[in-house]
Structure formats: structure tokens, C-alpha cells
Length: 93
Image (cartoon, rainbow, N blue to C red; front, side, top):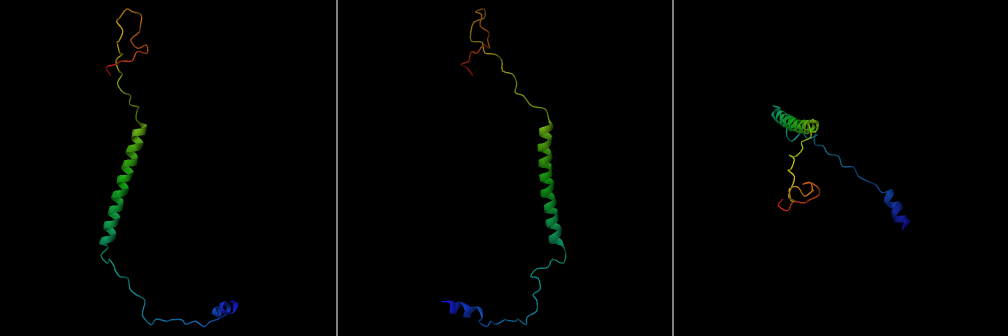
């Protein structure tokens, strides 16, 4: 078993040499139109993201919006000594 492994390490190998020239690029945009289009698209996406972050930031700086107060529920007749908001739950809400 060891003889086969050591024989494989010292076996002769062949190197293939290609006489072909180096390949030219498959696609070349000599006019630069593709580059300009991609640059404009990236700029538009970047500006949209910046505006979204700025809008989110500005909403965090604004004042807290509180809901309108709810009028108290009157479930006991007046004059019985029970305040309208003394833990009485309204059934009509």
C-alpha cells in the first residue's frame, strides 16, 4: 500500500502548453453608455435611500402625537357620589 502511494508522488507529469493568444474581452462598451446608465441608476437608488432615511430621521425629531382625549363614561346618575371616571367601564364602547 505504501509503495503505490510513493510511486504516485514521483510519477512524471506532462504540462500542456497552448499556442493560442490571450482571449480578448467578450463585450466591450466603447461608447460608455452602459457605464453611464448603471451610474445613473445607482445614483437614483442611493438618493431614494437617503431620502427615506432623512424622512425617518425627521419624524423622530418631531413632537409626539397623542390621541384625542376620550370623554368620560357616565354610567351612574349624577348626585350619587360616584365620579364618572372612578373605574366604571362603559358598555357602549
